[in-house]
Length: 157
Image 1: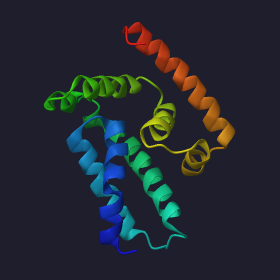
Image 2 (image 1 turned 60 degrees about the horizontal axis):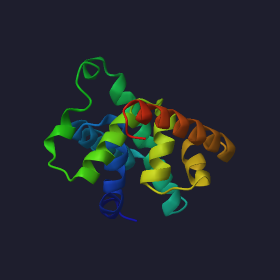
Image 3 (image 1 turned 45 degrees about the vertical axis):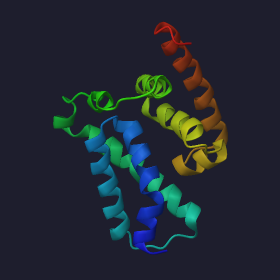
């Protein structure tokens, strides 16, 4: 698979994961760029398309984590880009849920997002994150309970 076709096929997925983690359009775009630069520098080949996809997701999540660690980024508002969109009520509610998702720990947030928004199975997520399927399931159950509590406090249960 050529690098151009990889970018065309996976750039939206990488962007969605980055945006879900950072909640800022410009920061997510920066992460996408860094992920694909890492892909270009990556010397090893991938077994198949799923291996490549898992690698891209893992690198994206790690790149988001590194991006948040940068001291000057901590002072910026993480929700400023949400105000840029004119949305229907369903999109607004979905973005609200995504913003509330940010209150969960990073690993839980990623598991919930990958499962419910990207449609991955628990086994697929376990492979991507280097965890056992049972550990992913336990985290998903706990994250749903935490998210339910957060949403009920906001009156959106």
